[in-house]
Image (cartoon, rainbow, N blue to C red; front, side, top):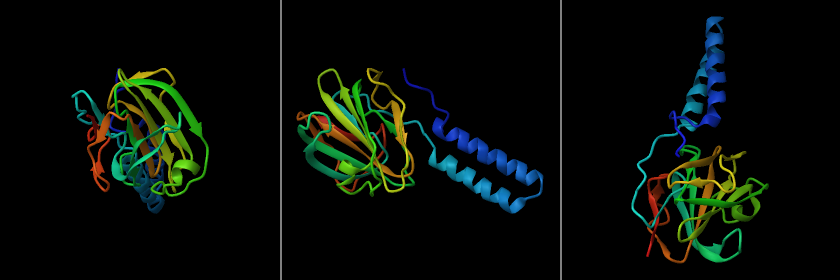
Length: 212
């Protein structure tokens, strides 16, 4: 069952409420310059933690993008669980992207592997090896996928909302990465990419690959 959304990621609600409350109190006591600063922070927090609804394609044999952003790499690479070489599609999220991540396929999460690390620019290849990351093994009806959230230069926290063994639908929210990052999807051999490097994509909506 899909979790309901209020248009904002729940991880941002405490920050938004605190900043808005601070702005209100400061304005009531006449401290307008600081109140305006907190109001601006509230606006930015609302912008950053926005979580719009998406029209998820229903056709079978599709992989949708797990993140908003730009496709920065399509390349054969060893996937993080078995080391098998697979075609990897990497989506880079900028500071201004929607940072809530969504499931690329219907499936069951059969393994989660978290690795602490550094904070290189997420667009760089070495970020896959050295940065903080969280890998997910996804088992659908006929195929197995791997997906990795990778923290970036500014990102300081990967948020995982799901547990091992949980079943989710394509387009369902499973987590987020705060302040710029990257998500990699490792495709089975029977899937071909439907996007090109440099293309803008949207989580849960843009078709990343199709079953051939």
